[in-house]
Image (cartoon, one colour):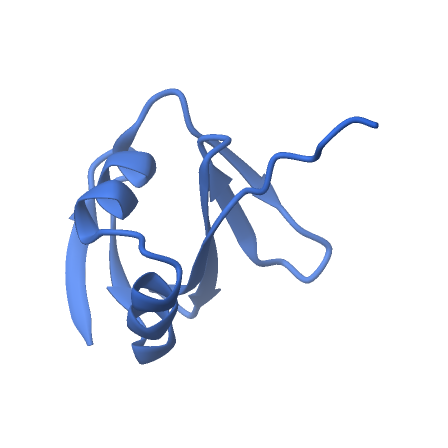
Length: 84
């Protein structure tokens, strides 16, 4: 698994194989993911299942803390809902 440091939260994160599959499928580059995670404009929300959603409104990542290890478990683009 790929490991990198996210300075915005002061923690290393591991990318799971699932993340790589989703990045390819959803055409999200590693640079886009890192930029979103490092952006001071991104927001983090703890979900009911205790996973953490980090988003900049365009790209979102779901993170899971397991012990002292932070895993990025999936990534996706936020869809813009069309008004009728």
